[in-house]
Image (cartoon, rainbow, N blue to C red):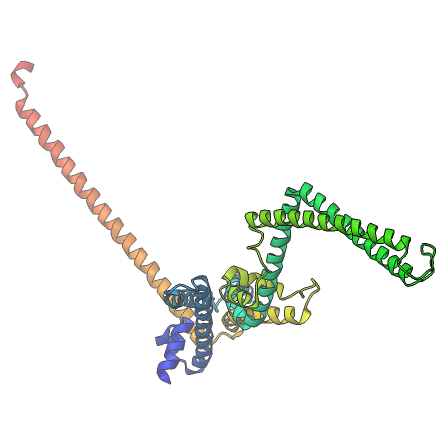
Length: 375
């Protein structure tokens, strides 16, 4: 247990030899250190999970995830440890808040980053379903776009085919009406266009001949339509329209399983809305609160340090800092004084040497001087 406490003290950034002297402060820094440690652990899991999806399908995906997760967790752990340990409890409350403000903002950003991959895992099933809908709609839109482009490209052929089909429908409707009239004539049903006399008379024979003629026209028209449709089908096959089909359930499952981080992140954002575009408040609140939970968890060590009263450990650290600063200033004064004395000694020595040189030169000049010439 003692080793675990010392480990958490290390995580909190506390000076362990000093903290050991004040038992009343040890639980506080054990809690702070544990929070920092678990924040780094969650960051490692989050970063590793995100990296796994980046390299999903690669043989080394697990190794990449473990290595990146460890590095990311260590970086967040080190940053949190620095953020908490750098808050000066000897300063005033306003100054502590001023010191903590950029650290809190940084903690919020870190919390948002590490919460996203974990949110992706929590809503994994819902994300896959939303991706399936997105992929299916995208494929349907792609097929519709190709069909519209194809119809525009062969606008003349489609216009002629549609006209032929309209004529075919009109002929079929007319032939059906004439057959009914022929039956009325044969069975003696009286109408405005039938005689009412039962039997196969001249009118019935004439109507039957008209039906045969129009049936031949219909058969010829159907043959022309089949020919036009065959041409269109060949052009569709040539342009690749037959290869574009709606995804099957198996294909959608496969696509959602191999979806990348960007697609899954987009789908998570779309979970806040229903398929029809209306807002899904329940899911939106759930996603928001999970993100806020991690943000609060990331900010918790800073809040704990700010809320905690200044204890004997903080006074001891502040006093130690003052002593260290005082020693540093005295060391500076010592070095300044030594430097001044050395400078003075060097100046005196150099001055004496210059004086001797000048005197020696003067003696030599006197010895060389011709005193007789002056007389």
